[in-house]
Image: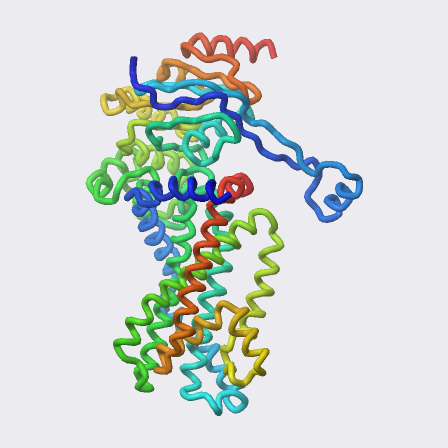
Length: 246
Length: 267
């Protein structure tokens, strides 16, 4: 059996949500009526699972089911409220919102900055710069400010840089939402390539066929709990079935 | 709480000393420099134009009232202006640091301290230009010597400690109550008058002098920096400043470490 990379036992995450508008008047009214201003909201409840070295896991569930929160906890951004999380290797995470992109700076400047955020140093990127620009099809736009690129072009660049990461544990959160079919195919080729074999990958996507092609197992989250986990086709079939019934 | 703090600091130590995070800091500083210089014709010269303008106005107004008894009054004024400007600029920008870098703080594993340091570095760069200018004027008056330059380095570090400590506390508080921004704008204006920028401590009553010196953490720093630049160093103020810088940094950073999880959920 492969080595355990992540062990999650009974993990829960709680946020506090406002029950009223947060204006001074509303706060005073709430205090006068001795009513609570906030309530607990458990985004994740009692999750237990393991991730092994080399696993490819699809994280599925409806919007608001807790996928991104779980990925943020695994990436060390949020702390869990209760339970234990044992991570043996820190992942590189790519969230859909393109954190770290500076719109006023050129494509090249953003390549170096994003590279550093994904753990790739400048000297390595210097050697790989042409390959990154060529992969993202932005060779002729390298001095353009990022704000002049379309959202798809920006996402292509971010993915091209992220692919240069040498980290053996990668997390993708809705990373293909804005790119065209052509780039999506290139992305899939890259995932199948030798450079990605053996790496541990956790990904979320609403493209189930993509997940079926690239993941071996899946975790289905529903209202913050694990509804089902197991072989990817089995879990996705059940999930799709539940959507039809719903 | 102390044991929680020490446990968190132990984790922080391993995170902050990894080379990866220093690469991010270097790139963020580089990016901030490019953004700062973008489309500026005068570039870094703007760091000097503001204090010189302020110096001209204050000198014109207070020269005959306070400046008569103070040796090298323009240098005296300029040191005060530069120091208080640095304090106000840093603390005001650190107040919002997690909100202005929300995407990075929420969607990457970059330690939030790196965001604070990157933001601080920009203001530090401008301050060093201004401080160098003060040094040039000090040479012009014949005050500055190499010993004084060596004394200035620990003092600069301590002043950074004061600013970073205050910045950590303010940035944390701002996540819980936005009123802090308005309160701090008011406090910053008060600091300008409660710090001996254009007047001397000797112009105050005994009580006033004690209040301004002991309750305003900027005053010992200002007295020490002036001592270095004007050749009348007070060792009491110097070591007092070093202690203040260290204490503010430790308290501010500890508060930040303890509140960090709550801060991230609030931004």
